[in-house]
Image (cartoon, rainbow, N blue to C red):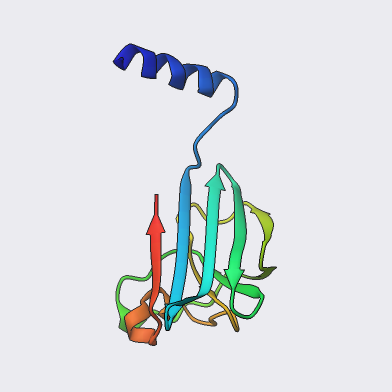
Length: 129
């Protein structure tokens, strides 16, 4: 079985079926209803921002060059702000390798404070694969 899985992976790689380098899923729920549902996939230097659903009809993204570790020092401005309509996708090339992001239904966050949701009063659930 192990050999079969290995052969499948090699065949998939040869045919161009690659897994994303990174996938970021963010969902925010208020009163049992999703207020934002977003998925960002990174393949090499191409990042695709998909606004799955949003209470406002738009996902407002702020992209930061890197994560800040201390809440008190989180004052970095975004390197990119992006608005994507619900149900739509937008691709961007050449973002920093270790970029971090915040997404909101109403307005793009202006500071990297949003990378620490509890400190910023936000309660989004993010999963990175």
